[in-house]
Image (cartoon, rainbow over all chains, first blue to last red; front, side, top):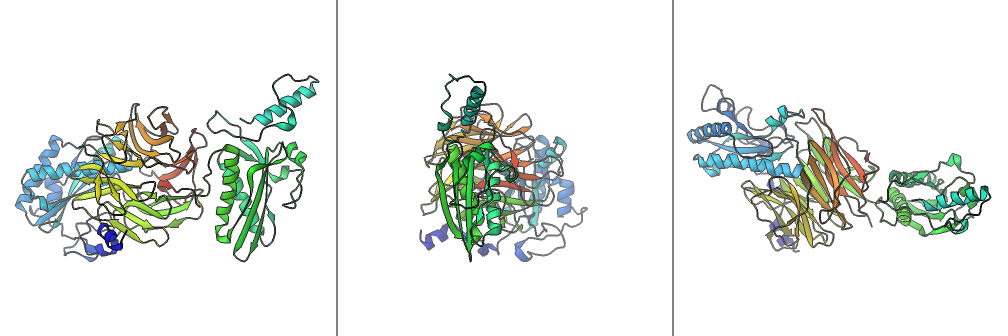
Length: 177
Length: 447
């Protein structure tokens, strides 16, 4: 195929260096959090967590509002508890419009790799759809799935699996993603 | 079954007892050539003799090492047992000299392989003959010479072993091949992953990416010149194409708000099929590498992933959870509803169509265990070949008779490693890698 046609479909990776890189598990380490500052090298957003007693801080969102919801095995439907946490997340986001969010979907290790990527995406989308239904602007939200690649807990029984089947709302400063 | 041996034994017994045998045993001197039929019950390894290849000039270490690789390949199948040199009665001193077949019959070698290696500068020549010891003849097609650069000495040994293996089993060879996989390090909650390739036996490892982003489930192109895989290098899971020779990488064009993953090549190398996720829903798409845009092959509110082409390119087997749990379906390569072929209890995934076209291998989960299994392409004759805490992601050897897969151990310290098993479920063994490893994909036989 012609070089021009090929270039429509395939983009040299080097050209993407300027883009937002939200993979907070990249080997470079840093994700949302740490000392305040706008986009560092490599396009990683860095936002101060702030004081957990300040209801407009990310720390407050993570610790008091709750940044994650959990799912049953193989499921991506929201539990009643999940809905109540997400309602609180939506309220916070509607009141603090200077933040965007990436919703991470995860799965436990009881499944094959590619299926779990899709399952994690389903979970992230369920959260995203709920937040949008509660009035959060869609352009403030983005989803990513990590499948079973980034478990929170590493033991191989249900006590760990339950915590790994999660969708986490990760905030960053900036009105849109 | 090793019929010549048992016939010979029976005939010897009859002679010893002074009884003329009326059993349908042919005369000793005319037994049929040594043969192993894979898939017919338990097989005693065929005893063979492979004396160290002769150094015909400048080839000392190469002759020894090439012989070792040939023996290792053949013994590694579980179908052959090499009779060590300490048991040999006569020695092969010249490649074109005569063979005292009685000496090799006396140690019960069914097949004798003689070889010779010569080296001049960076050029190496390897020649060999495989003999049917009982009939005192050369095995048909098993007298060859290979020439190339010394850097490729292991490949030549693999080619020798491939000829011997396929002559005796009637199957295609698979030793002269490469495997692409993911090399892992670090703790379970923060695995570092990078792409690597190696010979099928673990030798000649090369690393293709660094560990700075998660990489998953690579596949070779049909020519073995490109590798396609899923990478988080851009921050989101996206399909990436890597040229093996130059290591240049290109990422599939971004469709905003989507994730692309699970890419495979079509058998002619001109199309990629893969999963595309949008708004939480995952379907299978095809992209012609020669232009022509994206084609959606499935359209369902369920997860459709892990596609795999039939070797004639006319069909695609894939995984879908449209009935509530992941199962295996087959559809035409142009897309469609798909027909379910998985039938048993449990969850089925990662289907891969054999290069021989006759089987589909898969991962099955049932009652808390994982299995690698095979089934006919209509779903019949399902057989489970392995069982463990976590086995997944089989890949076929080029001859469609061996599978390699990932096995991961449980718990916080759990680690992944590569294993192979043959299609009868026998000869389960680990592939040596420098560290933990996952997601293997086998190349075609190298040219």
